[in-house]
Amino acid sequence: MRNNEKSNFLYIKNIFESISNEYDFMNDLMTFKNHSKWKEEIVEIAIDSSPKKVLDIATGTGDIAIKLSKIKGSIIEAVDVSENMLKIAHNKIEKLNIRNINFKICEAENLVFEDNHFDIISIGYGVRNFTNLEKGLSESFRVLKKNGKLLILETSIPENPIFKLLYTLITNIYVPVIAFIFSRKTKAYLYLLNSTKKFPPRRKFLEILKKTGFKKVETRKKLYGASTIYIASKK
Image 1: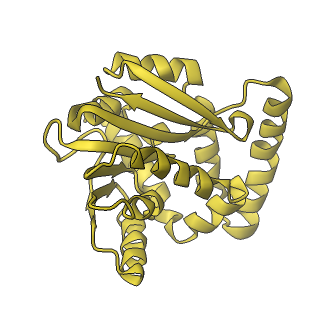
Image 2: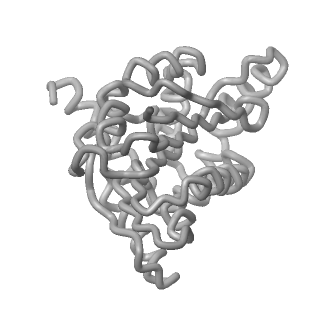
């Protein structure tokens, strides 16, 4: 890892360590609780493949991993760089008595799994925080089996001018205000908002996915394009 990448990695890691306790609550506020049903859709897509081996990258507090664990006969590997996030995720599965999830501290750009191992890989609101986007996606491609699917849920900026204006008002006014009221870690949430603005637009991101090896990619816009589900197949 180069010095600038290492610096960015540590900065991002520290942000998520600092907001781990309020992360779920703030996600509900920022997405008006829509994130939960979009994560359910990720699981519905995964179920169609009847996966046995599943990887959830940037698992955070484990929301998607927990939903995926309901797939009969599946083993879920869930990774994140934040130890505090994983502690919360582990506490959740202990309370729910879930036994088919394994949590690991691991970077998306340096996955500790063998080639062609997973049937499904999911990433919920994590790719925009990769230190090296192309390397992270290439690693996902490497550990995914042939005909496996990479399922990504990520924020995006609406293309329609009216919805884009509403999105801008919400992100520039609503989110900073609720961050100040409920968290007081405004700088951390401003970083997350800026990472959304810097993330490649949908068409550019599709090009990057194809560049890293994914030949077939389907997209599903959510909340008029405020979030997008990407379904990328390894052929």
